[in-house]
Image (tube, rainbow, N blue to C red; front, side, top):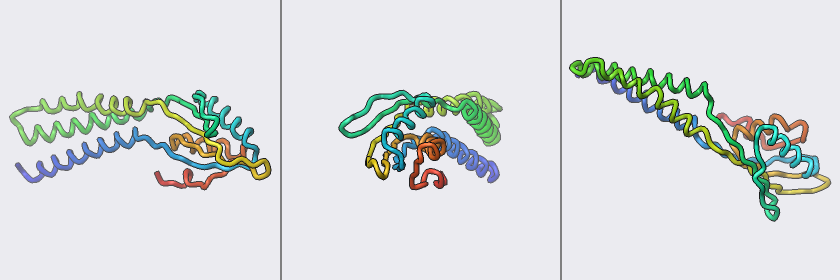
Length: 185
């Protein structure tokens, strides 16, 4: 085998591995816990967060009064555009692999190019199946003081917590440690 063909095969396999890791990262569970503080009374803050969640499609799933926990469930759907993009990348990657295989083994002809017919839909389907799921959000009242406000611990998907912090920080006077908005991930 010529050197340029073997190096091209190695690079193509590395690109395929990169696509697999990208698929895993795109559908990874990013559940995070954050504590928020407010100078408003706890009942007003909990009602504000509850109504905001219901507007976004979350359903109340009960909770535990003794532990001061409220639970909500919601369905997160996959991004159609990201599924199309990943299908395109999977098809191009499989086509590239097919071209390299047909150059290394010329006796097989151009049949390896048919790998793109498998790679394209497979990448989109893997993403769509793994990223569409039911999510939960838990709110726990940590501290309640009529003079200094309240503290609430939230456990949910990182993106939902960021949206909550951005949308409700002014109206409910929510403050957190700020790690969600400054994190590079």
